[in-house]
Image 1 (tube, rainbow, N blue to C red):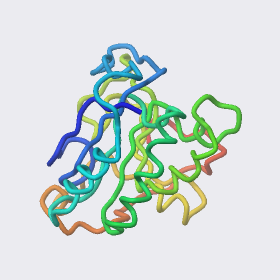
Image 2: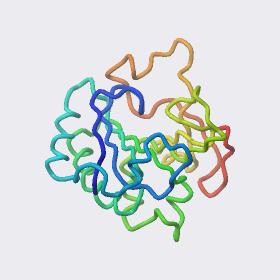
Image 3: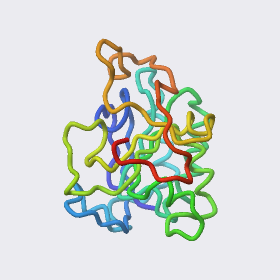
Length: 208
């Protein structure tokens, strides 16, 4: 696997202050993608053990809330196979930090046999994430007011809550008025407030 960029102290791609890894390679090719150079699977630098160690060191400060995976496409099968061993290390070293993953593939695609992104490690990779932001960027549905998303079809899925509830559960679109958020609280707890939608096997309205 290759990666295009590592961002330290990122506050744009998930709750709180985060370390963000932009992996290379994407077959979705969304119209007006904000960084089409990352479609190339060989863009940037090789993802090595030294890269993993560097990311783990960036995650160590107490004010870092967690890791975010962006792309490119983290859920391309070849990228999943490289990321899962690394995510195991993150979980082992930092069990209280959150891991967010952004994917152009939907949760339904990732969990349905026979789809392009689903492979032998997909279930484990999903199990290692706290939040999945899913869905392709759709230019016609672009909405700059959304939290951590570019278009209204994309969803903020709380995977911890979804596993517990047996249905897809979503993070709120915006922090509630007067509520302290992770951006202002480095000790923000995992599993924030949520709401439940339809079971994973059912379609979920885009308004979520």
